[in-house]
Image (tube, rainbow, N blue to C red; front, side, top):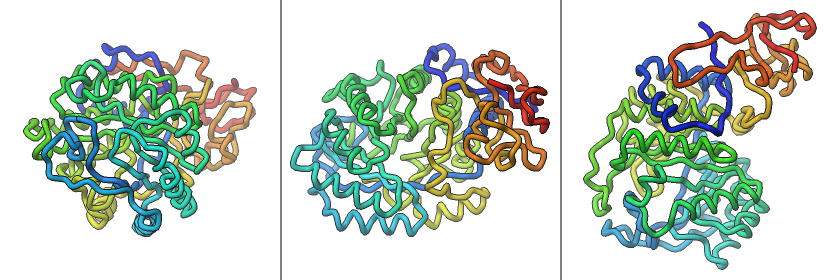
Length: 410
């Protein structure tokens, strides 16, 4: 089959994104799976754990959230956990197969008195060899720098929904507040984890707007959690009608095409998804899950269930040293082949080939890497159209490869 190049773009229009949503379902999944394979092993899924280190009593009014003090959910507020308790939870998560540990606190933003304990948690979890993430609300520049110095890898701060629908969901902080926090996180050198929630009553156009906004950020989030609303009694969205499962899978697929080098995380709402729906999400490019029987305060499939599902689908957990190997936002480089090809020695640094840059080369066993200088427009394609264009399949003589891996000199 011909292979399409899926470059990282920051100039998506709403019309282009809506056109992707309108593609026939099987065509959309094919394009998403192709984009996924260019940056990731399609059989690997990162396993993450999310721990609420401070639950309930949040002053924000997010319509979906049971932790808001403004909603009558009956959830009792708790104090910030002790560091030792967090360490024990992280140890258990690692023993269960998690390579990533995220800590969440229900408040508007950390107070100065909270930061020493929070940074101690980060340092301790990092020392266990886990990838670290925190979601603590709004951050100022100094707080972001403190977390970076403590060893935090990712900071999660979701946009939640399309900016035009945002005021219908949250009134106590603006969308600009969220952009400001994301800017502080980026300036501190942290990776961003930023996504949203679908099924809150938004239209398809607004789902497209959320993904467009994420993809068009100055730097695309390295991690994009896509949550399905879990309606909780007592919240304003308790009676929201469920989103069609195929529409959720379409959202995953479009996220993968728009942000081909990002981790697309299948997050809240999995407890309500069938095995078949989750399998379609993995086929569409989702490559991370949260496991454990609770996701902050809502239900989640337990570890045994996920292990059994992985076995049935032939999936395997991603090792921590594999998480940061994609060519995210690499200037001038578009990968147009599978990562599974790397391991030989045919490509050279002069080929602008990520396979050789990783030390392995490409083309082992007759497989075709297909690294290509993206200054050429030959492999570019309008992703809103269901027409696929073939990538180069042979090296130029001057490349000195002779293996048919598809490299072109920069």
